[in-house]
Each structure stands twice: as C-alpha cells, then as structure tokens.
Amino acid sequence: MKKLTVLLSVLVLAMGILAAGCGGGDKGDKKAAAPAPAAKEELIVGTEPSFAPFEFPEKDSKEFTGFDMDLIRAIAKEMGYKKCTIKNMGFDALIPAINTGNLDVAIAGFTITEERKQQVIFSQPYYKSGLAFVVRKDVNDVKSFEDLKGKTVAVQLGTTGALYGEKLKEKGTTLKTFNTSDLACMELKNKGADAVISDLPVLQYFLKNGGSEYAKLVGNPLTAEDYGIVISKKKPELAKDVDKALDALRKNGTYDKLYEKWFGKKPEK
Ligand code: ARG
Image 1 (cartoon, rainbow, N blue to C red):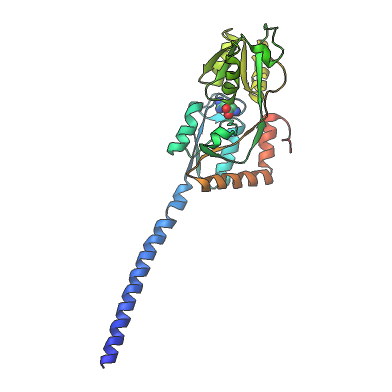
Image 2 (cartoon, helix red, strand yellow; image 1 turned 180 degrees about the vertical axis):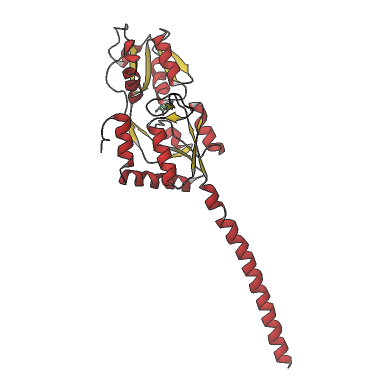
C-alpha cells in the first residue's frame, strides 16, 4: 500500500511537471508563430522620386512610377505581401530611415558601394549603371571630365555623383548641391550651372524628354556601378527573402519584361 502511494504521488508529480512543460511550450509556440502572417501585411518602401526612369511621379496621379517602382511592387507581391507602400524621402534620409526601422527596404537607384555596405545590407545587384555628365549646349570648351575645372557643376546631395564631383573642387570647380536630381538639372537650364554629374541612364532619359534642348552628353561614362536594394543590417532574413524574390522574378521572366518596358531593350547577361 505504501509503495502504491509513493508510486501514485510520483506519477501525479510527473504529470504536473509535464503539463506545466507543455503549457509553457504552447505559449512559446504561439508567440513564435504569431508575427509571421502579420509581417506579410505591408512592405514599407522608401524612395526619392526625382530619378526617372527609376522613380518619378506618375502623371495625374499620387503614385510613383518607374523601373524601381515596378520592380519593388513585383518583389513585394512575390514575397507574399498584401500591400506595398512607397514613401517619398530625401535621398540622404533613406539609409538613416532604414536603420531606425522606419522603412523595411529602400529602392532609389542606390549604387552598391563599400562605404554604404558598412551601414546596410544590399540585395543582389539588379541594374548596371554608372556616372556620366551633361553640359549646357552653349558650353563648348568641355570635352572631358578634366575640362570641368573652373566650371560650376550641379549634383544631388548624398549621391555617388556628388562624391565624384568633390574631386573637382580642388581644381577650382564650384559644386552646387541640390536635394533632388530634378533641381540639379533645373539649375543647368537656368544657367546657374555648366554641368550636371549624375547616373547615365537618368541623364539619357532627361535628354530624351526635353533636356536635349539645352543640354548635351559629353565624354565617356565615368564609372561602372551596380544598383542594389537597401535593407537594415538588423534584418538579414528580409534581405535573403528579397534576393529570393529577385531570383524568382528573373526566372519567371518578370524582370526581363520590366527591363524592356523601361529601357526598350533586353538586359545584358
Ligand atoms: N546611383 C546614385 C547613388 O547611389 C544616385 C542615386 C540617386 N537616386 C535617387 N532616387 N535620386 O548615389
């Protein structure tokens, strides 16, 4: 009888421990599982939309359009997000907003650079670009980058073009920095600048859409640069998922379709 009592109490105790264990485990599981579907609700994207054909305001609409905009919407969809919200910010505010968690990703024709890689994660490269410059049509003594010494050059704040332009400063060039790429080009039109340093595809689009009336492309491209999507270092999983989505869009033809839509040719392989 004594033995039975001991056995019973051991059993009861064991069951109690097991039940407690299960209970705890259960709660833990729920906690781990709950945020997953919630996270798929909305992808918050930052951009600086003065950069056609990558991001710019859509005519007669509050939306932004361009290659980057189409691409990130397709990526969000591929990742299973119900909604993709695009926020307009200063270009130099995008990386800080990624790092404070105000944005999930930023896409803004961002060149992948070593310096930026210290601060954020970049997706795989999604577009081959590079810097170039245009000069005003009436400026005839500029045939190469070196000839920009002593001239006035407009750039956008925080861009690789602005950094490249810094090299000219010691040569007596005046560098004028603007918050948007559009404003830099406007300065050229208004004869406040002799040249604009920016990304080649953006300058080409600008020339094609009215810019050629007062500006022209000079010399060869200055650099070769790759664009990447920006993600916080605190979110390596999100970065992996963006890359996976990009892989899928390349495989299923969506990437090529968007590239052709915006650049009128197939992407270089
Ligand atoms: N590719 C250049 C950079 O990363 C310029 C990007 C400017 N982008 C923009 N949306 N305004 O610095």
